Image 1 (cartoon, helix red, strand yellow):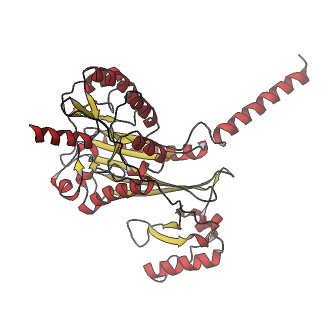
Image 2 (cartoon, helix red, strand yellow):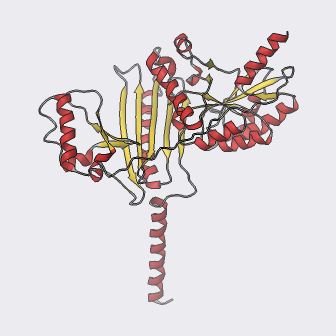
Image 3 (cartoon, rainbow, N blue to C red):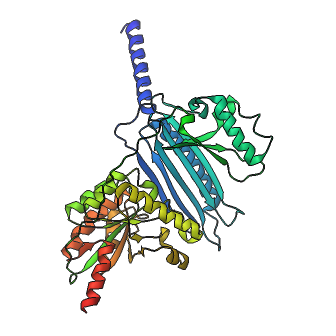
Length: 425
């Protein structure tokens, strides 16, 4: 082989590697749709609820995942071995996700950490505003139309908040580039770092017309969905399948399996996932399944104030009503933890369970199915549509329970069956 040919081959290999790296890091993965990554754990000393978006853009996903994993790893190292009589340490990571008319992706991550070791909970905000066309992040400075006009308005807001001094010498181009901010359908939210020992960042809201952004068009004529009525014989055995913590990328497979066996179930969903999985939720209702409320972002509700509990419930009710034209009537408290405060506040059917499949913990679908089949008439089975193994366990459970003449019902239908049985006893 000639020297020139060897050099040509080496160059071709090098170029191929560069192209591969470019497509892996910078080009969106067409096979990967927007979805939510979920980690929910309930250990002896800690509880964890993490939800964050996975986008079609690898470079954005890599940075989000690193940020989340760093917080998660630090939390585990600090609190996993710490047992407290005052309760478990909690980590909650939530998000907002918005795509502007220009195609910019705005993601905000909200971190909440609480423990008896702390005087006050830790609250942290991290934002990502990404331009898919340029494959890069946008600073606030990039989007401002008229720098002087906008900075003067920000300064005036800060003067009213803090008085003279402090920020007027900071609103330089470099400072504006460093500020965290987020975008939604009508405004830009700017996070001003804490000042004069303020605990949290100060939020400034400015309308979109200050920036190179257009208002998103409203979508009207939202269809109204209602649950398809199923034919149930109250004299026969019934069992209710329920799923928590979804929807997820696995939910559609579960819906397909349930459709195959003409089985209905109840899905207790998280409000912060509704927008990402709107089509999946519509499919649920069209198939006759029931949708229940499982809080907005899976905080431990039994530790929240009355106002916080109401926010968790109402935010979820509102987003489901907005997207689906449907209002849930059933609610399942996070981690199954319910107290009298929750019962007094929540004007809904509070649903727990009789049979826990432990699909969130067990890895073997056969073991999960064995637990799920240990039912009696009228039982409620707990599962999670955020795990791949759950669908495999269901493919074992459902045929066997059908052979045992069980009817699968939603939790709403289960209440109706109980009422009918009491009426005719």
